[in-house]
Length: 134
Image 1 (cartoon, rainbow, N blue to C red):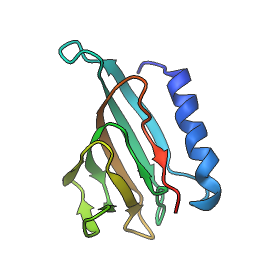
Image 2 (cartoon, rainbow, N blue to C red):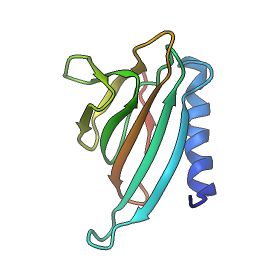
Image 3 (cartoon, helix red, strand yellow):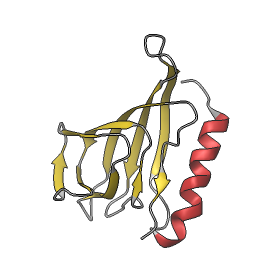
Image 4 (cartoon, one colour):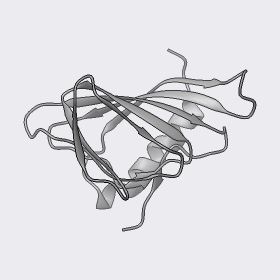
């Protein structure tokens, strides 16, 4: 696994800065891969693992890049602005176009953990997660 101290620190700080009005502690985020795309100049691909404790949720947010999520473990409730909330179970997935407002992302279980694999495509200067106000 390649170490990404600058990105990881910035991402962790963005989560910590908003944790006060979201939940405590925030979900565990692990950057598995961060790679420039040779066939798409100016873009990079990221692979991120998101681990939720029982009942845990993410803050409402948006991504500047395109995101695709796949449930590795448990069940996750997800809602993008303008759509109904959906519960996804292990093996199911969803797509979020760049700029989508992700209003709800949480572990559907109060007793079991959940885990997502998120694949993103974005420009190197674009933010992975931007907290939404209200």
